[in-house]
Length: 428
Image 1 (cartoon, rainbow, N blue to C red):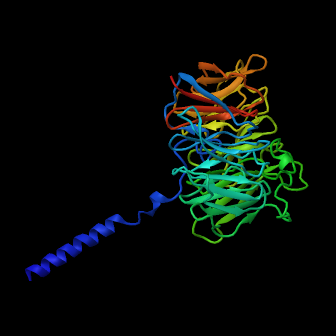
Image 2 (image 1 turned 90 degrees about the horizontal axis):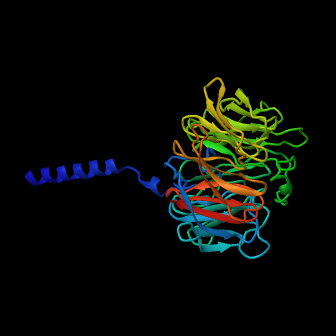
């Protein structure tokens, strides 16, 4: 009887232990890196990094991709950096070590034409990147994990729930992939009818300037809290693009549904939408030189604020609703607070011309590349609470236009220009 009691007690302990363990698969499922995972940072396109940024920097290295760039640098959870270049020959997708003077880890050549899309790093340094007609995943080495055909050129991919990858192509095909296996979850959703699947490069030249022959010219935004995906869509034979809201329904059939279409943004949206921390609001630049706040539940407008310039890059948004308006030629540095039923301009810097989206790092540090004199460019460090300039660092021999500022989990800062020069800064 005594031995039977011991066996029963041991069995109960093992059962309790197993019950407490539960399913631990989630830790191996793909999630966005803790660095600057892709263009505009996270899936919401917030251009916000929670770590307190360095207000004093030093230029560590400058390197060229020997070609052109049109999208931000992606930063992994460790020291890896990835760029999707457009080069006349040789490698175009490159992975470097940001903390080792940009030493190259590996590189490969992709089909050219998709430079407006950045790579995406997951938390295990796997890379996801598009080329015309395909989405490809690489492990931390250059050997391909998986490759799948798509209709068109993928915009910057996004992680949805852990293990699931969102791919939206410039021709309006929307797919969800198992990030590990590379198989499609559910059925693709086609936003445009009658697209020729054999011509994935149709309209690509219209994507960078956001013209009509590129139906989806900018990366989508996704908030896990609401399951809503927001993107801009220029439908055939229409005068302007509209906003579209899709719902992601994991484990259901269909996995994607089109919830609403909105023409609330006057003249149509320009650049990627950005979602609030709770996913309830989309902030969108209008071609009417206004910043718009859109209700993601139904696509109705909440408020708009005149900027008096055409913002060609998305705004950045902090978790507490501090918005720094987008940049571009003729732009101003503008801080806006979302007060719920209206947007309040809290400060304006007419003497700074930001050419990029401002990347926020914590509460009191943000970075943007601004015009420096007639033809030069500088990385400006400023306080997003009041717009005050903290530091400014000239970018040596910067040509073309800047493609944005990426912030690493180690507080390193990387920026680049369209002529392919990449600049790596470290905390001073």
